[in-house]
Length: 81
Image (cartoon, rainbow, N blue to C red):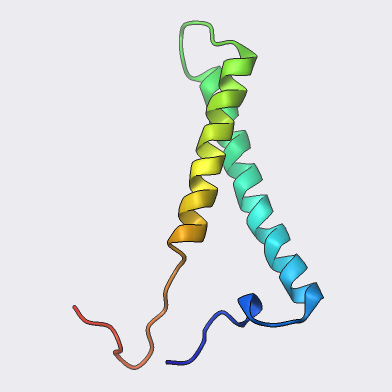
């Protein structure tokens, strides 16, 4: 099967850096959304440090899952149903 993610094996440093910046932006957005929603949604008061901790936990979990189970694209029915 053709390699669909050449950036992991490519020696071009610029392409790898761009890939990592894109992923970092995804994780940062996840962190910010969870942190702000943890501060805003509950009716009881939540400390800022606790909201940041929840945001870091969510962002880190998202990053680990994204790295462990990346998207897979199958071409010409190499997958089984």
